[in-house]
Image (cartoon, rainbow, N blue to C red; front, side, top):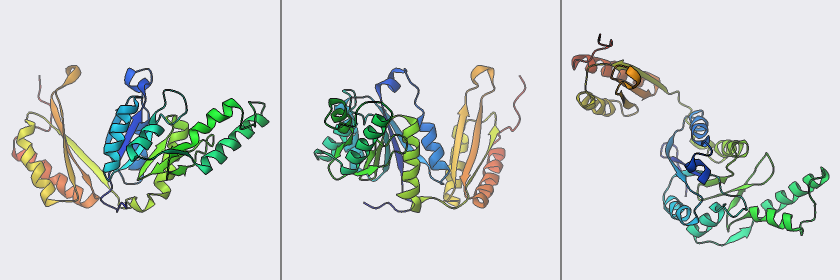
Length: 270
């Protein structure tokens, strides 16, 4: 499956009961948005899933059936609560197999630890046999280099699987974006403009937003209403994002339409 520039959609799957229970706060979503944004790309969707093999298998079966580029963070360890590797294999209908590169890197990691007086370099020792389980990926995968501790992730069908630890996951995802998907980076400058209006229902400005996108196809309009939480004044933030010249033209159109439709640009007095 090939992904061409302009048609790529990126998705993010975050795996972990600790996220859903609130014991830990997810940090991957804002970071992936940042990594994509720095390359002129954007995230289309995000899904947070529990450490449940059946649920993971179902979600990954849907995901593999699509054409999106997907980053999956978490659950690729070898403890009983890690199910992502097995779920990916089940979703693909493939067996798990020890990846040669993963075996090499995990072995090197054990040797390095032994040299520091941490554990043994004997790969037949029970703890190292257990560590090798982290190198069992769905058959046919490519390994993803982990510069932090050598324990790799894996890649298959435009899905990149990395550990849940940000210190490992983020460099692995960044390298993936800059190697596998460098051809998708948007080199064109893009910008975003917005302004606030008061005393106008969102439904009144909606036709103007639709007309704007028809007249400037490269520009996306947005409307972010606020109900005045915390004692503020209800208002709408209207804006556009896209190529700078077209976005500037679209902004002026939107501003004039808001004015024509009776919007106020200053907050009403109480």
